Image (cartoon, rainbow, N blue to C red; front, side, top):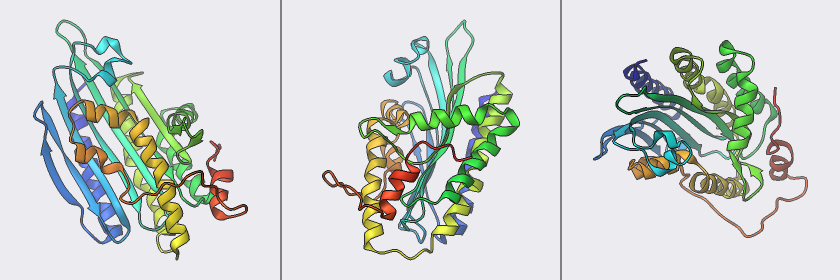
Length: 298
C-alpha cells in the first residue's frame, strides 16, 4: 500500500483532463495553487466564461492533519483520534449551452493512522450527469461508459454503484433525482489495495470518454432565452444538493479546505421560482417525466 502512488496518479489525471478540456473550449484554465495551514494544499484549475464552459473546475487536493472533522467521525467512530491524509480530484463542468449537460466526477483516497494499529484506508468516487434537456442516446452512452469502467472488476459493480448513485444524488426535500445518475461508491477497501486503486483509476480515466462525445453533440445546438431560463432554474437544484446534502462539500469545509475551490462546483448563474411547473407536453416537462426517474438505461 502506497499513498504516494495514488497522489501521483491523481495529479496526472488532473493534468490530462485539463489539457483535453482546453482543446474543446479553446481557452485556458487558470491554475491556482494553494496551501492549507493545518497541512497540505492543492491545485485548482478553473475556467470562467469560456467559449464552451460558463464555469468549470478540475481540482486536486491533498490535505493531512491530526484529526478528522466531525462529518467523518460521526459516521465512522473508529476514526476518532487518528491522524489522516486525504486526497482526490474533483471535477464539475457547467457548459453555456442548455442542451449540453453538467457533469460531475470525483475520485478520492483517505488513510487514517494511529500508533500501534493498522491504518484504516478506503477509496471513493464516481461520476454523474445532470442534463437540462434529455436525450436518450446521451443517457445510454454515459451509463454504458460507466459500466465499461467497472466491468473488468466484476459484473456486479455497475448495478451496485449505479443504484448507490441514484440514492446518493437524490434531493430528499424535493423528492427528485438531481440528474440521470451514473455511478457512486465510497468506503472501498475490499478485496485488496491494488484492486481498489485500479478500479478508482478506471473510473477517473473514463470520464472524458463518458462526457466529451455528449458535449460535442450538443454544444452548438441553437437556443434562446426560454432554454437559458430553464437551465438557470434547474441549476438551482444543483446548488441545493451541494449545499444541503453533499458529504464532500461538508468534509471540505469542516476540514479547513479552501472555500473558493470547494464552492467552485456551483454554477455562476442560477434562478429560483415559487412553485413553478413546466408546460404540459413541453421539452422541459419531458426532462421530469422521462429522465428524472431513476431509470435503468442499459
